[in-house]
Length: 286
Image (cartoon, rainbow, N blue to C red):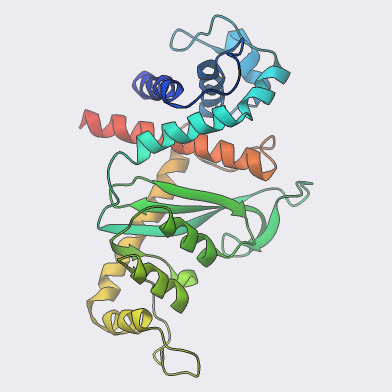
């Protein structure tokens, strides 16, 4: 991460520390330091013990005092540090509203087949059945990811999409792939004031014995018109996922020390914070 991106991240960490309520007495090592150390570690794709070595810091970020490895591992799991991370992501990714055109998709985060991680599950991943987790993302047209979730790989993507769209007022058109084709999901999104659109592979949609859903029937009619061409914009989220993996410190394959659901969620959330900081810096330079 370059100096401009890191300064932006650290500025938001300090703002979050002033905004998030404190619990109990003030600790020896402030939460700003703990969260900053964690994001510094994630940006360099290193384990937590790496952050407790003073030789791994430079002029850009050089803490005066460092906690022990056990203290750091325990503190980063605390409720307030999690709230600070959530606050920083919200400020970097949700400063603007959801764009009229947005996208929902999932990205498999695979672990090794010999991993003993009890939270990793077998599910449909990169064109085949794999074992691991999945990042479910709601992305905007300007490449932000305001809402996201990480679940085991066997969790139904439609159920996660339903929860995502409930967390924030939405509108406009939301594009998804064929895995999200569900009549109840169409109706749920329509009730929230938005329009859901997935590929329509069956020409007899709505003519079967199951209950027809008006929102999905309307999407079938639209698909036979211009909606099929509009849906090609869904590839934007594929490019977003690709851009996260091509930069140093981006969201690539899960390293061997990131296991269990809570650690995977925290790691992915930190990667998304760094991604949005780079996005803001890159746009400011244009």
